[in-house]
Length: 148
Image (tube, rainbow, N blue to C red; front, side, top):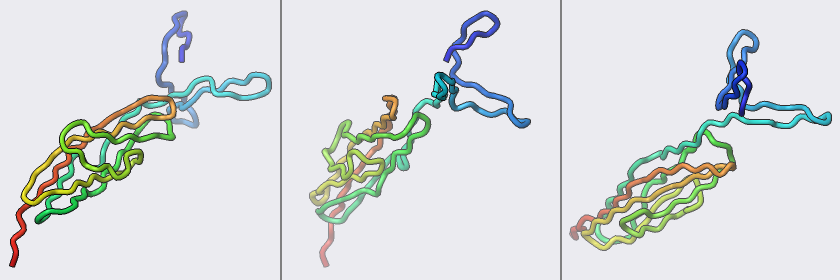
């Protein structure tokens, strides 16, 4: 939003008003036109993203399907609703159980006595088209199974 301040136009990314004895952060400015109120501008924090787990590790005995614990993408700022996209960046081609959800898991069939790792990225997009991304490291390991 642009405001005229002492004869100079300035861009404003944040605004506060003094109401009932306290300063409050403004979230939007509304204008009245033709007997109707409409939003003239909104003050929205930049979109950021954090993951519930920055790395995941699975260790199994012998061979078989290995699945990680869930990892959740937590957006902050921006404007909802949000969309999510999980994708492989490099390394092992694990299955992404919910590639378009906030929470997902990774699974991979491991041969006995093997080790695989990969990097996966979650990109969140808000309703305004802003994006934020974070990577998660995923490690799968199979240790030898010893028979009785």
